[in-house]
Length: 71
Image (cartoon, rainbow, N blue to C red; front, side, top):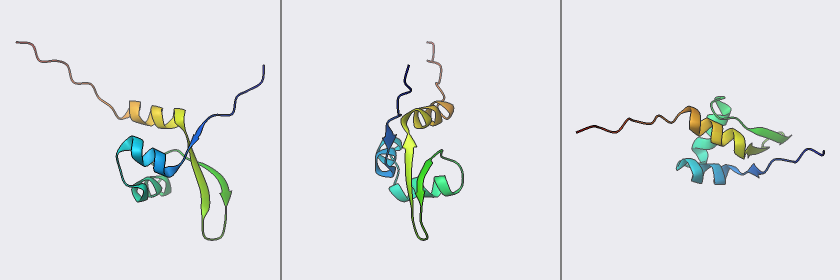
């Protein structure tokens, strides 16, 4: 069985999913708070993408569900 290549998201797509600015996505990556894949590293810029599964796990780890209030 052949392994499938995961769908990779751009910083813009991640920003939309998380409802934050694209610059905040890059800042979170630089600080190690958001998992990313560096596909290429240049002198001035890197090509960074995000695994959908990693972003979903990031959201789940930071989401709390409040119990419903009983009357």
